[in-house]
Image (cartoon, rainbow, N blue to C red; front, side):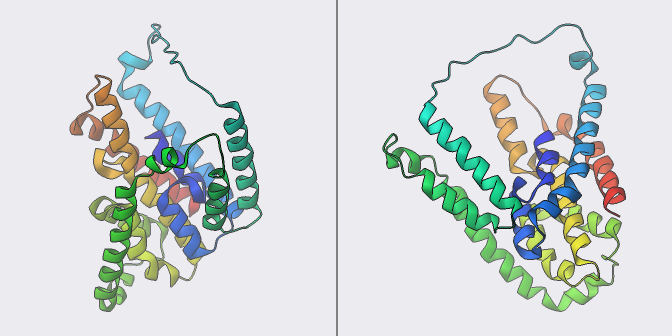
Length: 258
């Protein structure tokens, strides 16, 4: 839940924000200045709601045993990665396109004799890349097929942050947040205050991922990792916290961006 809320803070926080950043041309710094306070407030709500929902685990004197896994560190590669990350962040705030900066820095990091290229390429999730490629093709088809209905959707008053947030949150849980952003792109771009519309869309499509376990990829990854560690998080246990958290953070985001 915290990873979802926190990812709303910057353009590079999650895939839908990257898409919104490229479509809206909002500067990286301006985006972060607008949504970082919203994400910070949302993280406070996450912590409070989880502590209240699981008082027997959080509000007790007993502490969980610490686990210190053995980690092998290649200091040279670590230093290169840290320097590359710092340079990348600087270029983000200087207004350079995040996609271009990321691919150039990533390509430079691959230039190494310490790790065989095969080991690096083996870590790439090719199935996920194929999924996103197919997703963009599918959404483009939906966008063209629904072109005559855009005028009807615009009549719902999506210029109001509350209405746009509600539609974005509902659509994000129906078709996932990345397709939702792509489907809503023509409407948001045509709004009188398009900048605020893009920011509301980024906030709502991200916070909506906390509604259910399948609301975001981050949720599925955490649930699967928890299962491997012997902790089962079922759908209804998650929903008991996710539903009120999503509602509260969406209202909070609309108020702060409105």
